[in-house]
Length: 468
Image (cartoon, rainbow, N blue to C red; front, side, top):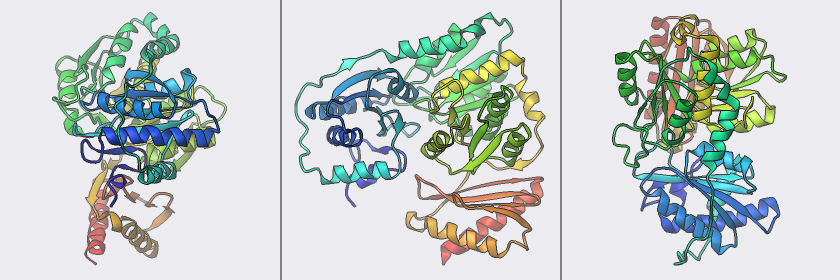
């Protein structure tokens, strides 16, 4: 396998520093992406924005990336150490033809990578693969010893002005929720903490300072073990909620005052309810196949049009733009507001929309959660599966349950991303991970007994197929 192959994924470029990812890689990427942008835009004069996260390798990789751009005559605007959503914001704010964010999101410190943007959209899938093939064919990999040339721009200042213009009125409310913000030593706290404080909220910051070693916990708010510190502070100091970000602040997680974790589809439902109450013109809500039936049913009740779609933040975002949906999201904590915003995933903006809902409606999140239908559900369950067999196993599971439809009283089968089948008492999802050698499972049922029964059946059947 070519060394470049290992770093290119479905949605971005990511790998281990000094193995798959190094300064030479970044330099060549800058050269190749320059040619790619010129080809796609049919323009000679090109300008790009570049930002980077708090990882120890990010600054040097950014410098090499800029050198690659410079050798091709591309102008670079360096927006500096910022969350990924602010790099996206620069695509709308600045006169650029694309951009690159140097980040490995929530991966461990030894990783780094790149998120590529053309015009105002992020590249994924076949587009990423096209860049990969161009890099593999590049023969001149010498990292030139030149001084990188770029213009610095304070995009944080513009972002804060934009946010305060939209949410500044919240300062007038006296009865606001008190919260803990856990930035996980990523780069989200750098922007979110002072913004939320400026809006008059009582806020305690945990691990706000960017630190590429991530010394306190892994920066992934979808994992329970990473929420322990925040839950402890919320409980001990009687805060109303806790909000956590991942490493580059494009995903958000929420914990309640009573210690429960608010799963991603529940938070999506809350956002959907209040967006649809505004009587928007195009009430389409998009959610990925891992989300609860409660979400889809409630959106219909409120007059919205729910669309179940493939998992993957780039796939969800593309579908949002295609349908001109008002809102989209996925279980992993990516939320896309096309209502009052630009339609990309921004954990800081999502946190502010949540605080706005709670403040304006004097909402008790725990009571709202208790008002939802009671079901038993699992988080994502991941089963190891060789990369080359993922699709085969999913196909076999799909074929098996289609044949056994009457036995299991299956009412509906959805195959847009793996298989999701619905029975009289719940639903089951089995799909191949887009990024890891794993199968992803999720179950939801009316009671715990049926949940355990279906979980056992599906896992045993996957085990049988894997042994074949």
